[in-house]
Amino acid sequence: MKIPKTTKKKPYIEFRFNKKGDMKLKTTSDWWGGINDGFYCTNGTCGNTCLPENLNRYIESFKKRKSREIEKEIRLMQNELQKIQNYKTIV
Image 1 (cartoon, rainbow, N blue to C red):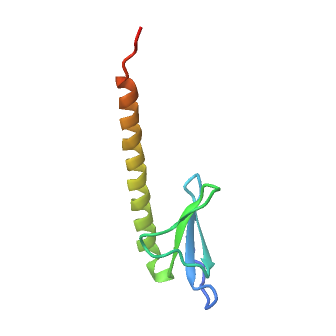
Image 2 (cartoon, helix red, strand yellow):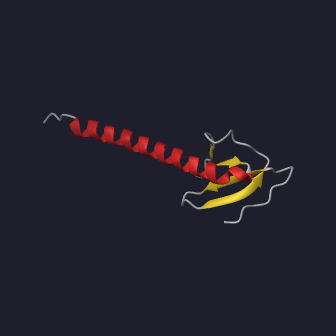
Image 3 (cartoon, one colour):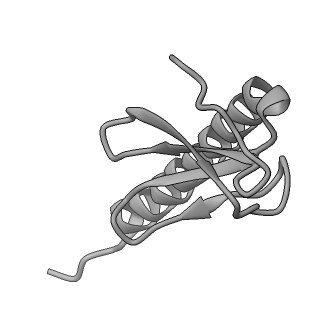
């Protein structure tokens, strides 16, 4: 994927994943807080921003963090399912 050219006005690269998992890159003047941060939009996209030289590190960190979040959600849902299966019914 081609990395966009940054400028003084837009020194950061924004990577954004859509609902299908496709990634788009663009330059921006916004910064979203570092390697352990990012953004989630109401339209289902998510991503982060960084300096061009840190792009690969930030993408890998974002993917790992997102994977951990999904694994946690799965564990919570499995616990809820187990609770429902353990409900006693009165017949």
